[in-house]
Image (cartoon, rainbow, N blue to C red; front, side, top):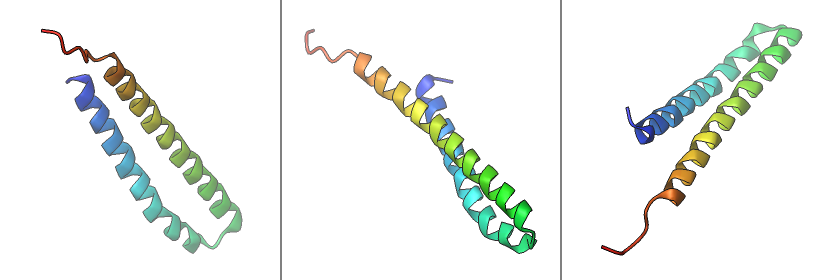
Length: 75
């Protein structure tokens, strides 16, 4: 697998996980236990932050690769 393909897969999977987390949050409210809800919301928030960090690192790597690409017009 090439780096570009791996980058795209990582970003896609992070997006999928983040969308699933959004579906999870409304369900948490039905647990009827404040302490548990707060812990789960906090964990969900932290997971979402970590997913964003992963995506940003991959994007940073992609930009670094693009900057290092040969843009010469010489033959």
